[in-house]
Length: 389
Image (cartoon, rainbow, N blue to C red; front, top):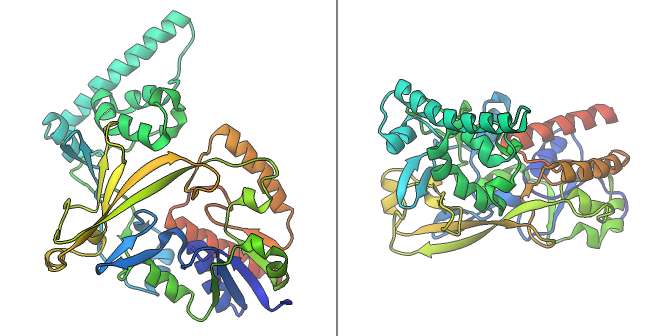
């Protein structure tokens, strides 16, 4: 193939697409490849019965960075969607995140003072248990697991109804077997505010995320259905530099072993003749008995008011969390001590590469919100531009 491009970008997800656009703006030639048969990575949306379905799980864009907000809005308008999930615990509904609406639904309290007193009363019970334990052992005791930590932060009622079962499904193990550091803090609001995020800007791209990625990649050469590792030598030779967005351990042929992930699977269903199935985009099922963690009703991301009933059908996705196995789609890095140490070994190998740049969630083994992905791509492209001047 010969050296034809300045950059080969492996992956057409958000990190790859932003990098490609920024590099082309600076005059570089770029080619992108992706092993999937579509662009967009995990933010890909596909049209089903006139509804943009988030094929790989719900993606809600939010940021307080005006530069990032202006950047994404330069490609496509973002709508007014506000993430306000609801929790279903054994048939009873609670607003999320934990706020005055939640506390009223749980205890009937109506003022911040009443809510604070109730939470403090329950936190005190957990604190007393820890003190008794400390006295028995003769040494100060810290929470030893997620359950003890959660009880100390928000008390028994919130923990039992809204944290315990959901967390056990997410992680595939009991809360008493999970480390305390997973929830060092739990945001509690003493206002009647169901907006999940505190960021200044929030929304969903009108027309779906695929439209956003398409506009970023306009004019780029993109080849789909190509596994980089099947043609690695030939593909490496076609560009001066490579931006790799896949799993870092796979790049190095699992030299030190597999990094671990949590993954999710989806059971998507078209409900013909049902205009509005659950009344909200996201409903979490926080009991341990319901096998799925949540149900997404996709039309609520982009349809509001009369639009909902004008569209006669709906599409829902039940989301199941499970332990990742080789061959599964990796979603969430497991950033415990073991995996962090393993990643450090792979990062040392990556840092020694002179031609390859590792960027994004999989290549950096780090969970990124979408706005952070864009910030990181901007940072790396800027560093690369300075390096090659």
